[in-house]
Length: 307
Image (tube, rainbow, N blue to C red):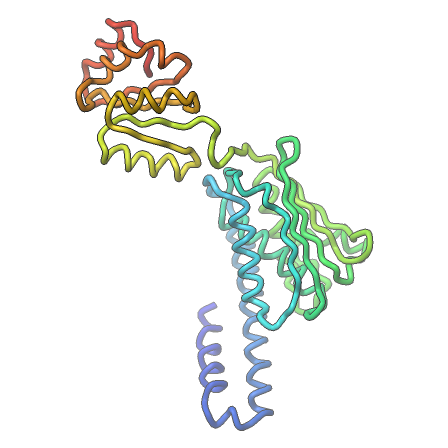
């Protein structure tokens, strides 16, 4: 990769210099060199990614956002193409899954690039569909290109197999590995009319981005704000308050699943709060937050439910 960068800079300087702009033949040749440099970059990237592919670094991510990002990247990669990209995956908007964002970005990027290269630059169409079905996340990326030879369909996921003159044969092999590492399956076939259809099925332990039940935090303002941000980042919705009266009013909505309660609060401590509002707190999972070593004894003495 390091050897490619200086060449790209040299070509860019030559293309943008005033004198060369007056020489159409030289300008055309320089543009061809730039194309070859991009091809070389892709080959190097494929080789590096394939050789370094390892177990996923799992994080809670939103597939909707990763698909959107890759579609934006595709359009910037092919700025002169006028390809229509139909997007039908709004059903994934509120779903979080545990996966490796970099690997899934590589997966979707490779498949979208293949689809883009398979269709007519001016009249091509790509359709991206994503649905949640019986606990599985099903993704389909279809194009209206020339399709795939049925015999080749059996080999496309093999390393170094390619039908492209400039292909490395690693793109779909990488895709296959990434999907396997995420306990999924991938298949490719021809569409009913024309073009190719890539189908991916993931069996993630998915989670709604915002759970139907909320966390309610009752502690100091600073800790409420910090903990609320952490929980929201992990996909949980939260609300917080400082005073017990506010907390009881919020709990009347019955939308909360978990109460995080501080031992020390304005006007009342957590143990007193639990003791006073036992009926209102029935059905909640309650966690007591404290640095006090005596709180467990207080809870036990008063037979109060908290973890």
